[in-house]
Length: 598
Image 1 (cartoon, rainbow, N blue to C red):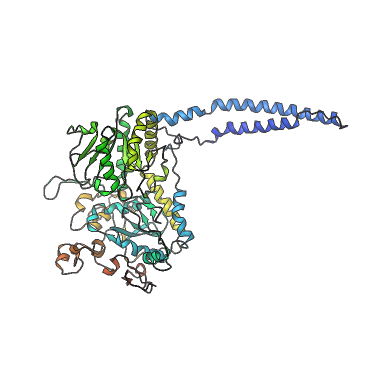
Image 2 (cartoon, rainbow, N blue to C red; image 1 turned 30 degrees about the vertical axis):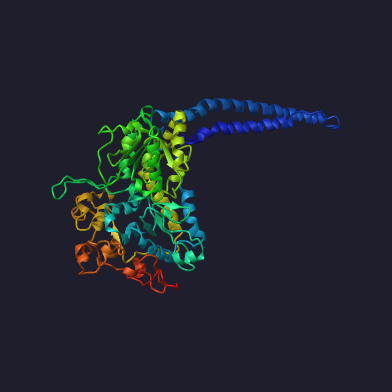
């Protein structure tokens, strides 16, 4: 099946080495066998010599065959290896390589992503980072991160206030990777927008508008990448959202946690256990999809398919920020009868694991629920059309082996019928996908991050120096305190747990106390200009001290170092100005509608 274990010890390869040697001896025998030599006066002597050599080869061949038979009996057979790979049909996978059954190879993905910057850009340059910084100011989230001597520094470029519940998740991959791996010094830009933004230009005029005349595409890490962009793939926010402790609301109300997404450290083992708990034979023989139907045409079409084919699909429209009751708990008949529901009830991931087929239909180019679907042990039916963007791990999943691919939503009903007609095949695909995702634990995610950052750092054409605009991150709580605005999130997410610290304080020292708990927080906040969408009429004046909107909201933010013009769409750096990353001060920009560009 291609997802089974592969023996790695040298003892397993010994039988084949012996067999190869025996083959060479047999060839020598055929070449040296006696032939009539009527025209050669020394034929009798020569043939006698050959016969003696042949007898010696026969003896050696017999000895090697005896060794080969003994080695075959001692080594695991190919049948045994195949059986080990299919054992997951009734239980968890068999451990072969350490704690993992399958290896993850990241080099080809990393080098494919970085090669354009090596070949076209002359490596990672400060000029490229300055351009990337300006381009990502139009997104909802963007920060510049530096690791220097094992310390992490962050410069906020975009941190829209309504995204603050997930703010910590944008930087946690770096913090957790540094806790596990020796991350080299680097300087890089990270976007938090769902879709990649470093578009490959269509022509010279498009390139001039996007990046400036003669400017190459700059390097930027994004949650997704695509064939039409050069963004570098990086884990999205759903891997490491904050671990909310969710105490009682300060007003006395019961705390309702706003984040439905658990951190991967928690979700991975728990969902995997839930998925393995449901036997394949007990699953409902229908496909299920639940989510917001308004975010893409494909999702609207899948809703229509559910209306037309209730015998095959159950499509449930629900908005993630609501907390509806469970469709199973309220006895909703559609959970088994199929069809559609609209904002009546919801399905937990554990409940979705009760179905044999799970639909993955992207929104904004991808759906970050994909990794959770694989853990269920159900067949993931993946609609490829309009899945323009991909996450960093997707190339490790093979169509027809780990999931059932379909080009369009219209093909979904027939694909379900084919899977129902060959239940054994469907089960193999379901368990293969589950086994593959079972290996992508938090350690493997940070391993990818480390490998990517190591390769990226090797392409830098400068020595990273601390950005004067940056603030230091030592512990997870530093992130929560920094991105809190007027007490909106701190009470939900402060951990007061030093296990996340890069440099934890000595137990019992005076540092282990509020407000630091071993952190490096010094009272700084994300700048006001980075925290608001100034193009919205409701935000006019929010970053102008004394304005009514500033008094209402802007005063909760940090001091600005930049200028409003830098946040207008299409603005590009004025290369005659010094780099803000070097001076810590604002620099003029070239407006989008300005004809002449340097």
